[in-house]
Length: 138
Image (cartoon, rainbow, N blue to C red; front, top):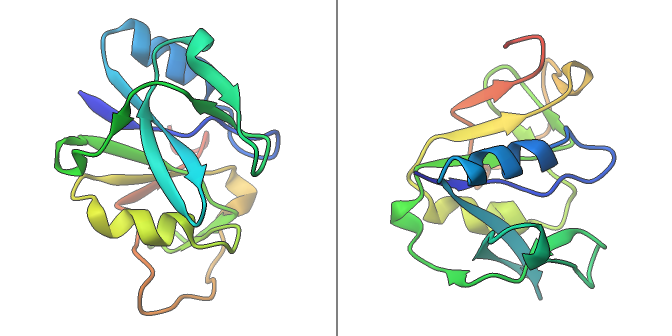
């Protein structure tokens, strides 16, 4: 199974253990890398394949480039806020807004409970998450 994840920042739901566990189970883990105004996806090949990105100081995979978006089975997406209906508010740079239209897999927003709001500003190009999960929904 190919899973798009993100290497969490301190203010995001921690994903570091999840990345390691899923990778050790044989799943192909893809991590985004900021490349100009776009996110490119790279295969996670273990902790030694991580490097600190120059744009935001995020740990990014230096593994092989992955461009076969149709073969991503699941995408776990960060956000600053979500609604129960799956609306997502990012950090404002539009990286995921440009990436998500290329994906046809389920999109899972991963959030802290306080990040679930009754409504958030949305635009026509915003893509809803299939589901939003918090530690209270597990």
